Length: 566
Image (tube, rainbow, N blue to C red; front, top):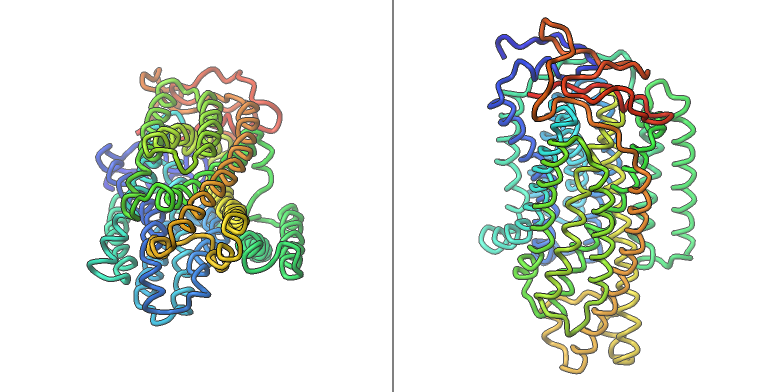
């Protein structure tokens, strides 16, 4: 924009100079575009889930149905660290726009797919772009907004995620019923075009040019390792027995690739995931908490609708609406946590309280049976939502506050990667436990007939359930109750680890201007100070607390000042 400095340092201010020259109105437009991009990534899977029965009916390939989701997940997880590193090396804006374009190309091709094989391949292309969407959104917010102010904006992002989860099934069902399943992919095109135009027009960040080369060997090792892990969690207990040779081979390949990846990252000139960021205790703990949040959140959104449809008799559309207590509570607490963090600069209370509420809510959900009312289950879901709302964006905020500006991209991508892997593990492990429990219960209650009913899948759709004899239907409802009990009990056990991690989080004051900042401590010419080097004598920004706070060994980056507020 005219009058906006364009020569800010590639590292350090990370866009502070640009933002200081922006008008707040333009920054809000950028944030709106970022929210649209995040909604693209979140909404897509929710819409596709509703459209999948229709897709299979037209394209066939029921045996390969899971690969429509798995291909997308694999590509997203494998590309996430790459996008973060590319943004750090060559500039955030260009990499973010590229990810949107790739996502839209994958969406258009998926909508034109003529068979299941094409759809799976095009979904992988879509996943490559999606890997950069989430990382780009979080990293650009990290560039534009100082940590002290970042909480309220990331709370808004959590609200967008909640809205996507609520609206996805409803939008997907409506689109599929009235326009056809191909529009479940085409709907991304106008939304993506709006995001592209807005980001191109109003987002101004310093351009970077790095002579370093991308770590292709590290990328290959990480991709192989992640692929093997996701395949183990996807196939284990379903396609293949956990003790089968194929699963053992995948485990061996995954472990070998990841060990090789870690070793190579200590040797690479420009590692994709610089291991020094894990020297920060807070960053490591937030990565672990993010993994657990992904594990719990996606597991809950998978099994709650199933329980509501099978046991409580809700329709597919109504089961999405019945998730409102959880998602609404998550939206409210995300906004409150962001506002409180912005006004006080304090945040440790939220991971601790959030972990307690999430664990307690999952324990309550594990108590549901065939007699549980919708009101009661709604209260239980609200408790889980309150907990997840305290954790969703605080994890990213603290992780970003724990690294230097030059590592903002890889910090954002690493945190996103852990959450993605957590969701893959959660869906796969909780799903395997649920299916085994349902099949065992059906075999016990209905004998051989029950085993025949659930031989191919423990998850029956509403039409299949309605065709069962009354006695068999009741047996299945009891089996689903037992399956959800086991799944949510496992989730509660895993959530305890988040509480343990939250207790050890060190409250490092967030940098950046608060609601009533003091006079700027930077230069009098109005330029933003450069990021502090990896040392303990960083100059605090306006409104920062005294620099004498003990951040602990290995956390020097947590003292580096961020960009000043808008």
